[in-house]
Each structure stands twice: as structure tokens, then as C-alpha cells.
Image (cartoon, rainbow, N blue to C red; front, side, top):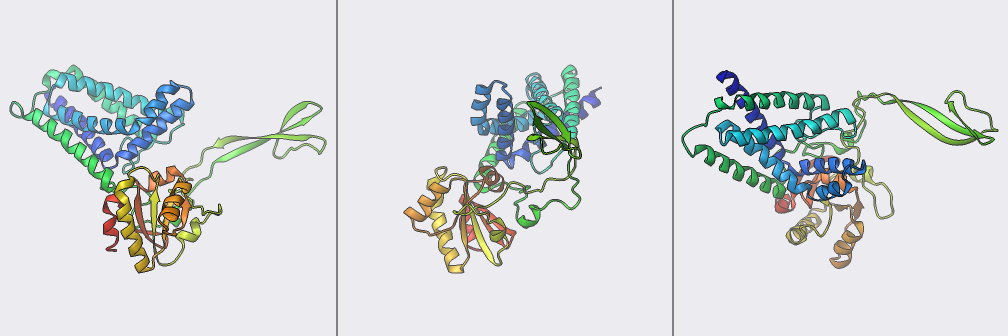
Length: 374
């Protein structure tokens, strides 16, 4: 029995630490996933005011959740306050199982983000994993007398405190300097134009269409091959999913650049020869004081190297005012969806160096001085 408890304890502890660390290298990824859950639940009418409040505090919840996962894993492995640790693990695992079951059975959210973007799992895989972990934690709760502290008195406490400091420092670092491991489609070496294309082995969704027509105040539905004559008036079209396809969403499917005239210039910008910069700026007020001087250096370097420099932002009016009215940089301001910017640039702002459509490098506002060496 003791051997079974030890094996279960190691499995649960290691998985919790691993899960937390995978998300700790990109805490904003978990933040955006939490926001997706809160947004869906709020839209569905589940405690809308509470969901809106939680949406606005998703970043704090993300930091707490990541830290809690790692610390509880360390606490279980070291036997630190085993009764409280197991109760917290059980509560957390019940919550995780609820989330993964919602993802699996509702179909309203694609993935739960359990292992971040680096290890994508299907809904059935994450749900199965959580059920197994839940059963292991229940088993440990009933056999907790076999969960013995690790090492001498005081060592478990020291290890728990060290884990808290380490995971918090890690998150602080990556929030300032970008994730340690970039698992997103916009990482260095990727061809953005190629990733905007439909995968070669894509299988499209299959639909049937019914058309509603009206005649003499009577509405009737017709199939696509049985449309009525011209005496009927078209009212509506209804689309029904017959068979779900697979692999039919490009890795980059929401990224587009629009110029001041409203023209989509994504292909034009990304397909240009030579090297150029994209300066991703989600909002101009956030972190404003920290990047102005570094940007001026980058701009000067771009002029010296004759490299085009584009501002990519979700707030065109404020960006135009700052860059071209107040400071007279005279730069092209391109509009991009805020969600796409959050995916491409985890720090606000982030500088990309591209050669054609291929990403050569990316730096957060704290490391933009390194871009001038490339």
C-alpha cells in the first residue's frame, strides 16, 4: 500500500509542478484563456456581473493559479501539511475536471489550455487526464497516513517557500522579457504567410442548406435542389452542420493588417523583399514611459539601415497622434485586431524583425536595444 501511495504521490506532484511551470513561462496565455471562459459564461447569462468582474481580474487569477499549482505539487512531494495540501488539491482537481468537462461537452471553447500552448491536448485527452488525477488524489486522501514528510524538520517549509519565490520570479521575468519558450505561430523562424494558408490535409465542414420562402403570408422551407418559382419571395437561409471537418483552421487565422484607407495590406507587407520591423502596440497608454526612449533608438537604427518600420496597433487614432502628430516619426500605422496582437506579442509593446514573411527575431520593450544589433 505504501508503494502505491508513493507512486501516486509522485505522479500527482510532478504533474502539478509540470503543469504550473509550462503555464508559468507564458502567464498571459492562461490569462487570455481565463478571459475566454468568463466571456462565454457571461454571454450565456451565468452570473454575468461576476463573470465581468472576474474577466477584468483574469491576470491576477492567472498568477495565483499558476503559483498554486506549482506550490501544491511541491507540498505534496515534500509532505508539507499533507491534510491541507490534499484538500486543496482535491478542490482544485474538481474545479479543473469541471472546466475540462465543460470544454468537452459544450463545444463552446476549443481547448482548456491545461498545459499552455506548448503542449496542446484535445478536450477528450484533458478530460481523461483530469479524471485520472482526480481518482489518484481521492486515493491519496483516504491513505494520507502513508504520506510522510520529506527530509528533516523545516525542510518541507523551506522547499515550499523557495518554490513560491521561484515561480513568482519566473513569471515576473517572462512578463517583461517574453516567454522563455515561444510555442505560438509567430515564433522566430516561422513563415507567417504560409501559416495563414489552409493546411494541405484540411477536411472542410459539410453543411446542408435550406431556404425559406414566403408566398401569400405562408412561409416554407426548401432544399437547395428544390427551390420554388419566382412567385415566392426569399426570406432567409438556414445552414445545418452535417459532418464536422478536421484540421481546417490555419495556425494563423485572425491576423490581418489594414492601412489608413481601410485596405488590407497583409500580403503586401509580409511579402515584401528585404528586412523590416513590425512594432506591435496593443494600447499606447500601458507601459508608456518604459519604451519611448528605446523606440527612438530603434527608429534611428531603422533609418540608418533603410529598413521599413511599421506600427501595428488596435488603437490607430492614438498611435497616429503620438507617432506622427506629436513626434513626427512619419511612420505607417497599420490596424490589427487586438486579439491577434495579444497572440503575436505577449509583451506590450513587442518589436518583430522580419525578412519577407519569415520572423527573424522578436523582442519585448525591455530588450529592444538588442534588436539594433541584428
